[in-house]
Length: 210
Image (cartoon, rainbow, N blue to C red):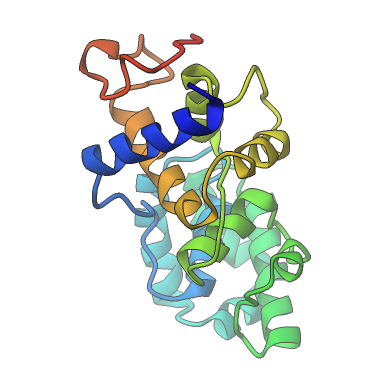
């Protein structure tokens, strides 16, 4: 089985296992996903979803958040960790949206990368989830699982993993595939305990590079 054939088989099996998998960050507007994905660095999505409720209650629009004092944002987002740097990035990002994009999130990958606090992972998430464009989000689950399964070979650098996956994952499948890896990584192919290989839908095709 070639690596591309393995990728297609993994995609199909994960589709059956997690048919409704999607982004685990709660949002109803694109700018909110930008905020949440920045807060999610070294923090659980579940905690982010709780914290942003207070943030959006006080600042219900990108413009309102752009006008907020950084220290006021920090006071709310502190439970997510790295409060000062996250608040600074969120403030700068919202100001840039207000001043350069009329409060709208751009649907261009390079433009997204110019926003404060937005890297390739965040930009891909926005492109895939908000705009429905081809995207591969190389978060910790994606990097761990694709190495274990054998879709990439000992690559830990997020950008290099992304580039390797673009070679074998059909563009239209990338975004949903990465969401399903998150679900699988949390429930089965775990990081902090021994993986539950006995109940894994990929058991017979996984390279088990653990």
